[in-house]
Structures are given as structure tokens and as C-alpha cells.
Image (cartoon, rainbow, N blue to C red; front, top):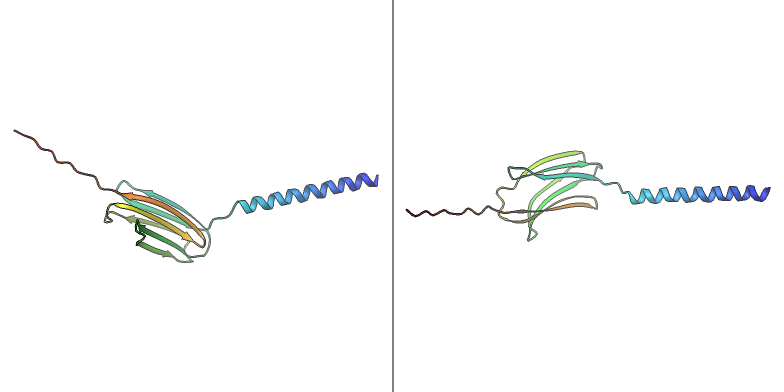
Length: 126
């Protein structure tokens, strides 16, 4: 009888240890992000940027061109939890750009391209 009780207790302890370690590894796999973004282009050709911060760390917004030159930079303070900005990129020349939002060691990067419509000329002969 003592052997069967010991076996049941051992099985219970082993099962509980396995269950708790599985829960711990699931928590490590699901890292909590420090911010979330919503980035979209409007019909008017502007980029709307929404940032929801979940920590009190600074967050940086950068727009760089293909050569790596910084076109736009803004740092969101520690006290700011929500941020919305409409970025007018109409004055930028045609080319490829990168929009980067970073906080702590986390980055979200979006690439976008600005191109101009080529207007054609129409010629009529009379």
C-alpha cells in the first residue's frame, strides 16, 4: 500500500512540475511588446501613423531615404502613451524610403516608395 501511495505522489509531483514548466515556456514565447503601430496611406498621399505605447520608455520615429539620410525624426517622451501624426510626404522627391518606429530593443520597419505620375502629351493634327 505504501508503494502505491508513493507512486501516486511521485506521478502527481512529476505531472505538476511538467505542467508548470510548460506554462513558463509559453510565457517566454509570448513576449510583451513595448508599443503597437498603425500605419496607412490616405487618398491624399499622406502617411497616417498611430503609436500606442505600453511602457514608459522613449520611442523614436525615423524616416530615412535610400542612402540612409534622415528625412524626419521625432522622439516621443516617456509620459506619452498614445501618439497620432499625419506625415505629409508630398514634398519628398520620388524614391524609396523607410519608416522606422523603435523603442528599447524593439523595432517596426515599413518601406514605402514615392513615385510621380508621368503625364503624357496629346498631339492632334488638323
